[in-house]
Image (cartoon, rainbow, N blue to C red; front, side, top):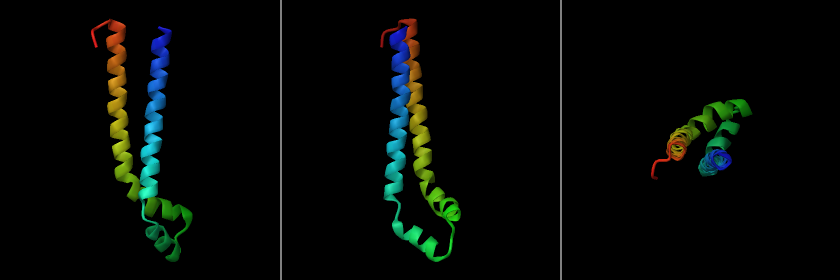
Length: 88
């Protein structure tokens, strides 16, 4: 039972780590010119986030959420099979 708990925590850490990697990749892939244009137009940091960064990160965010749901479902299925002692 203790090993199952450890594996579940490890699964959550994996999900968080992969989400951070995807979000960081999305931020790094964002063109800098768009942020520079917002700054030239006089947008504040808050406006730049909500009107430039957030919309550009939306596809990455949706992909991250979908992948997290799939991974979490896989881990839950795996836990259920282990607890009910089905063959993998």
